[in-house]
Image (cartoon, rainbow, N blue to C red; front, side):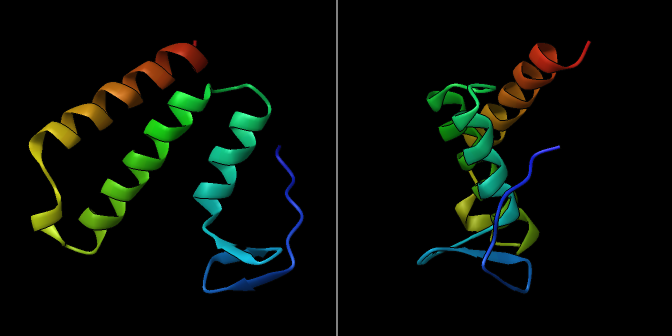
Amino acid sequence: MIKVSTVAVDEGWFQCGELWRSPLEMLISELAKRDVVTALKAKRARAAAGLGTSAARARWEEIQLSDVKSVIEFTRELMAAHLE
């Protein structure tokens, strides 16, 4: 379990100091800090999260097929590395 201290919560977003961050962003940052994922993989995870946000909000013009392929590849790599 990863514990993260928070100051305030507003509609699923957490305030950490002056920044408001999503729970997913906090998780990605914590995984990178603990060296579970590299900085590059954390960056790829953030890109994947952004694509998911665009899809969830039906902003199809923001989504490219190459982005979807990258997210699928990243997900497969993550699962292969951490699920046995």
